[in-house]
Length: 412
Ligand code: HAM
Image (cartoon, rainbow, N blue to C red; front, side):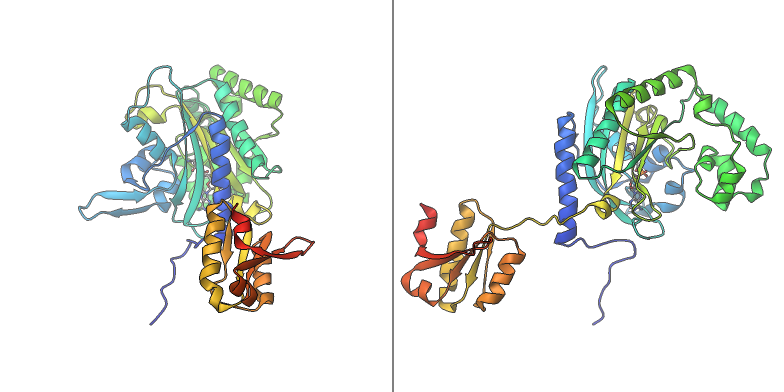
C-alpha cells in the first residue's frame, strides 16, 4: 500500500525537536508568571468573522492566508492564523473587563497560515503569545518589551535586534493617511509591486514596509509616520523610549515598521535575527487600543502584546535539549529480565530517571547506550547477579569504578 505523507508546510516534531519547544514553553511560563501573567488556553477553531474584523479584511493574512472552510452546518470557520484575536474574543466574551483592572494573559500553540513554505515559514507554526489589557500607560509598553527581551535572553538569545515604531492613533492616522495619499498621487504607481499597487488604496501604510527594492526606491521621500504623530502619541512614544533606554534595552527606531495586522495603534515592534535566512522576524507585537471595542467589548479598553515564532527561535537555540537519564539497567543474562525490570521500577519510584534493557545484549552495546542517554550509573544484571541476587553498578563518569552489592543497598 502507498505511504500517506504529511501535507506541505507542516512538521512532525520528534523528541530532539519537541524538547526545544518544551524548553521555550517552560521558560515562557517562568518568565511571564514573574510579571503576573496567567495562562489562557483558547480554541484553534474560531468563527471566520473574528479574524476578518480584528486582523483586517485587507491584510495578506485575511486575503490570502487563512485556512477557512464551512463546517457541516455551513458555518464559516477558520483555523487561527494568530492568537491575539482569540485572546481578545475570550476576554470580551467572558466579561473579564472591569474598570481599573489590568489583565495579563499568555498562551501558546499552533497557528495556521497558507503561506509559501520555506525555511522558517510554515503553514502550521507555533507561537508563544502574551497580551495585557486595561492599561494605557507607556510603562506598560516598556514592561512588555522588557518581558520579551528577558524571555529571549533566558532561552539564550541575546543578539537579536529590536525595532520600534509608533503607528499613531485614530486621531492622527487619518491625517497621515491623507498626506500619504497625496504622496502616492505624485508617483508612478504602476512601478510598485503587485501587492503594493493594491495596497495604495486599501492599506497604504503597508507600502512603507514592503521589502521590494523598487517599492523602497519609489517611497524614499514618502512622509514618515513618526513625524506625523499627534502630541499624545508623540509623548507616549517618547516615554516608552526613555523607559527602555533607562532599562538598557538596545533597539533601533524604524519609521517604516508597520506590521502586517491592522489592529495596531501607537507602539509597534519587531525582533529580528540575521541568522535564520530570509524570514528574519522572530517576534512581533504592539498596542491595539481599539480592538476590544471592535470585537464587541467595552469602549476604550487598551491592549498590547506580542507573539514569538517558535520555529524561528528553535533554529537559533544552541545545544541539545533532551533530558539526561540518571541510570541505565543493563540486562546481560536473559534470566534476570524480571529482576532488572523491577529494579529499574524501584529506582524510578525513588525519584530517579532511567531506562532498562528489555532483551539481553552484549555489555559493550549496552554501555554505549547508557552513555548516549547520559546515564551516570549503569546497573548490570548478568549471570552472577541473577544467581546471587546481587547487582553490579558501574560508575559511568571518568572513574569507571564497578562494585557488586546486594540489591537492597540502593533502597535503604
Ligand atoms: P506576527 O508578526 O504576524 O504577529 O507573528 C508573530 C511571529 O510569528 C513572527 O514574528 C514570526 O516569528 C512567527 N510567524 C508568523 N508567520 C509564520 C509562519 N508562516 N511560519 C513560521 N513562523 C511564523 C502576530 O501574530 C500578532 N498576533 C502578535 C501580537 C500579539 N501582537 C499583539 N499581540
